[in-house]
Amino acid sequence: MSRCSLRARLAPCLSRQVRAAHTGQVPAVRKDNSAVRAFSEIPGQWKNSVANLYTLWKMDGLGNIHRIMLHNFNMYGPIYREKVGYYESVNIIKPEDAAVLFKAEGHYPKRLRMEAWISYRDYRNRKYGVVLKEGEDWKFNRIVLNKEMISPNVQGNFLPMLDEVSQDFVARVYKKIERTGQNEWTTDLSHELFKFALESVSHVLYGKRLGLLLDNIDPEAQHFIDCITMMFKTTSPMLYLPPALLRHIGAKVWKDHVEAWDGIFNQADRCIQSIYGQLRKNPDADEKYPGVLASLLMQDKLSIEDIKASITELMAGGVDTTSITLLWTLYELARLPDLQEEIRAEISAARIASKGDVVQMLKMVPLLKGALKETLRLHPVAVSLQRYIAEDIVLQNYHIPAGTLVQLGVYAMGRDHRIFPHPEQYRPSRWVRSQSHYFRSMGFGSGPRQCLGRRIAENEMHLFLIHMLENFRFEKQRQVEVRSTFELILLPEKPIMLTIKPLNFTQK
Ligand code: HEM
Image 1 (spheres, rainbow, N blue to C red):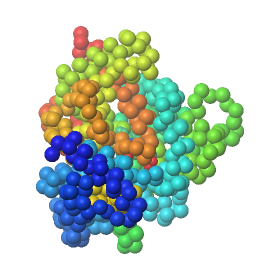
Image 2 (image 1 turned 90 degrees about the vertical axis):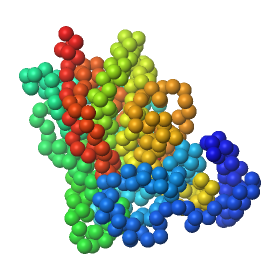
Image 3 (image 1 turned 135 degrees about the vertical axis):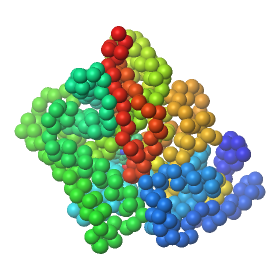
Image 4 (image 1 turned 45 degrees about the vertical axis):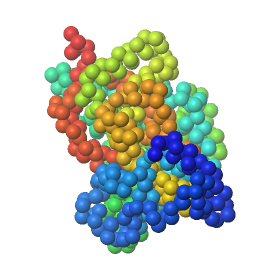
């Protein structure tokens, strides 16, 4: 069935569904007389959750969740139901189904509950930040944070800060190259990128540099980076096993998780205390833009405890996400030298046309922006997007009751040839041409609960790539395919080795 006819068939049915949700009933027959099938008829493995968990464990499935999802869609079709451990969901892949899902997310969209993170907050008696809050409390905090972080007029605040960090990164790479004595540097850039990402997000949040791009860095900051990686890694097993049980039996994964969050909170507390102290001493300092934290403190709309909780989560969410996406982008561009050159030419033309005005320049690099979208299609940070639906809906002609956890398989969608022709090819131009992108670019989520750090992340990554491509050529020694592994976010399975060469040298 074509996408259009499916939509046409769903539309009348959906409006009846919404009405039905209010009356607590589900229509058994659509207007076109086709019967809506029952929830229990959805294909999938959902009858024996313990056996499913055991199979997952035996197949070393934890790191392979994204590939298992892809396999399941190939086996069951565009919708399937699963129950693994205490985690139950309906999984979908089609953009038009995503549209139905996000329309049914309600006023207070709810993602999959991160029980591990919630358990830690409860265990240490710490407040939930915007990532974990729900209902009216989430909405209130999110509206205040949106104004500071994502509304279109805040871009001007962030750009100079992010630009400065990117330029310093370029200087650091030149230094590293010089030290090799070979006019090139072959390296796994991930550790440098973690530092770059933390330096960037901290500059925006605190209005201050942490100095992570210097040779001798604060060991506490390095510890913070290690803690974030550990926090993500220890979260994934707890998606399927209740943290309360793991805590009760003193499991190592729970202890490591607590240690990781302790490290994250301690470092964030130190940064927040230092800014708070400075503000109290010197409240009228006429700095340009003081950073998100100081701005929130001065507005006095959220309690200090709420601000601290969200700033900590923003700091934690702002490191592995952007750094790994940049690493994948460089990996893809190193494999495609002609594309790399094409993007470099676009940047060069944009620099000349904009006379170096960064805001203007960012409007003139569609292929570069397409490259990031393409990276997030093939290597999304989040394997899926999830919502507990607020009302009954129909997906693929199955009735899905309100309250069900529905997951959109973002990784699987990005690799489906019916949605993206030649999905295995990295082609930024597919985002530039005027084909429909309706519910296809899902890397940052959708709707009012989408990524709060999106604007920072996009600007940070665009500027990084602009400066790096203006200065260096990226090469890969061998055409080895690097797969990804799931550690709550998707990471490269093995180190990505890149060779970085200064452009002015190779062009001579
Ligand atoms: C490549 C970079 C990034 C990607 C791909 C990414 C992706 C995502 C996704 C998929 C979500 C869930 C959205 C949904 O459920 O609809 C999310 C939520 C979130 N992200 Fe990001 N993110 C990135 C960078 C960042 C950065 C740099 C920050 C902080 C500065 C951040 C902060 C957050 C927060 C706070 C939420 C939760 C928002 C809420 O629940 O209201 N993210 N992100």
